[in-house]
Length: 180
Length: 69
Image (cartoon, rainbow over all chains, first blue to last red; front, side):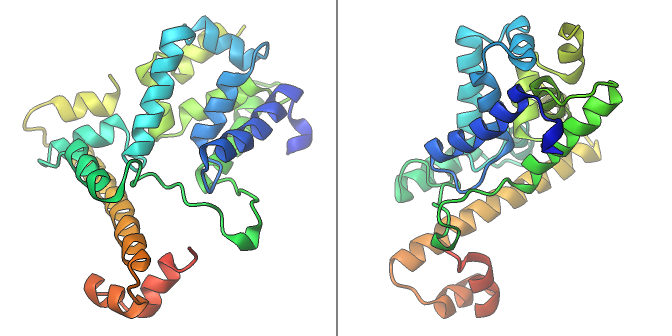
């Protein structure tokens, strides 16, 4: 599949690994793919994100939403709201756990096991995004998988990343609208 | 605001999606909480047997789940 990836899409995949390393994450997730996408400059994906206003404070707000979800052990804002409906205050739980176990205690940031000697695997969800990008590409009758296909695939998969994106106006339809 | 947020905001909502979403979120929260507590117990020198007893599961189950780190 990777032979069909454009240089931009490859840069996002390798950038995601770098992002995971920098955050000390044991695995490469959808979040790292998105952060790597945001790091690109002249690719179709990066251009689409810029066209949707994800620069400066909006981009910072998106990154903050992702960091916040990470701190809540991977629960999105919608998850938190759903739990609030049951009377469960996730913010309070996070605060208490951090009080006892230190900041970021609920973040899954354990180092990779020594057996793997630092090699970070992609999570099942992140792999599905890569597979999804191929499907999106084929669906659009395009030959090369670009980072815009990765972006479309990210918006299409339910979870923290697509919700944070949607909250910042980046949905599948919105991205399609700015890709010409 | 995302769709799910809208859904949750509707007071007294009986839409199963809201309840199911909460269950799924709770399950993930529970997994994270368990990981934190097990790590903390191990750091304080607890044996897998002792941790398993408190969690109400077998020693093998808890070791298989958390033993890699």
